[in-house]
Length: 100
Length: 480
Image (cartoon, rainbow over all chains, first blue to last red; front, side, top):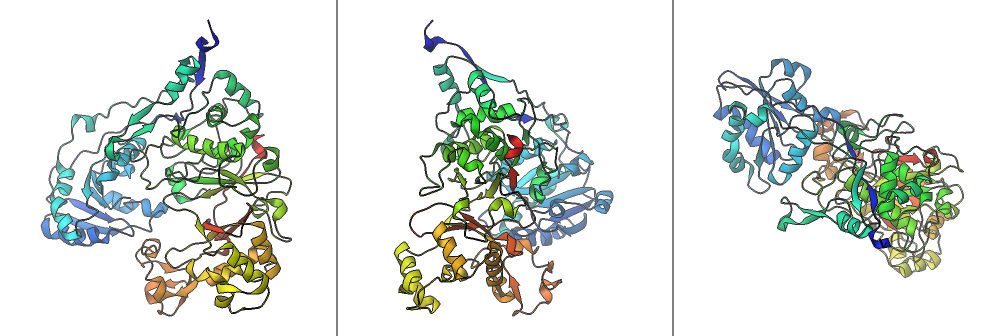
């Protein structure tokens, strides 16, 4: 066997992924009627989308009990929270945008 | 945001189409695959755009779950120690493998293990040789050797920055062992004596940053000489094994440890062409000016690596004058720089930063990092800046502008949370301040940074600064 035919084992450079427990999505709402939905407005840009969205949601879906909230500054821990602890208790569903 | 779904609250998000795969990967990483979303437009005006998908948005909250959404498929995370067995020639082919990425224009191929260039195939023997460059055991997990303030964004993504806790490599939040760093070192063309620095770079996040990569590294301390780094002309360019191969290893860490695949796991934009690791030139520091390691409380005889983040479209900019113009300005006050500064005919030393300082914060806030040639640093010291801190303080003071002007900048729309927050110097709400109120574009003088290095004609470089609250200097000695 020549040098070119020599067999080697090569080490794996790929990083170690920790196990992740995968969860199903939360069950959907049965109806929008009377549902308490929070619209969490992400901080900063995309006002072009978010200003009309916040206006149109209650106009188009008056049967929903809307809670419009505004997140803290972008790229902060607080800014990543879509719902406060209190809102988690009182919200049936969440709309969040724009997510960078 | 996955915690909302885990809490049993159905959700829907507004994202952009081109970021969809990154969204899916992030969802899976956070334990709730394929959280529902609709795509906003990057081009269509808001009201028209919203009208086109608002019904879909609400439908996502009521449409029953699919089987896959109820029972997410398992994720294969196996990680065998050996990745390939064969001849050297076969290994060359194996490590050249690329996969076509449908999320990239023209279905472009991206290499699975490399930066696109050939690598040294990491045989057991070569990795074993590389491991002789450190006393740390091959199976040791890369952890923080000291407390580091990693910053909100990195902490959110999983790395605490706390001593003894594992370093997670972004964007896929993976861990690594000492052996994996040695493997990557072999692939990049490094030598065993580079191991302490490679491991310190790994502790610093391995060139991955927050997943968008582009980190650059600066060595401060005697170690730079031990491994024969180039301190002089062409310090950012090719030719020196340590400068280039170690910087390349950081990029390979981003690919292999972080799992970077553009538009799949990484939503960055341009990438970065800066992948050298360079040394600070201690001998060239003007009297009284601290080295980088002293700025971060390391001893003069210790060595550290400083993680300079130039990711996400940021790059190096030059100081906008020609070398000859600089020399005439300093020697005799001749030329345009002298005329602008009102020192025509007066020999230096002059403060050359005055020439362009007003342009530094025209569009973007925050401190600046200067790559300063020894001669240009010396001119500033002779002019009167006895310490680096005096330069930092001067830059800070120069960054003040009226609120009227500040409000014409884009980024504060985000950093002030659409001007709803508190202005830090006055403690008052932004909206209550007069238009003439002066606000700094730099939050803290220490956001500025000077790195004395390189050689040759009188050209300076600058880029974004640092967070005064972070400490991106990592001990090399701890990894010997």
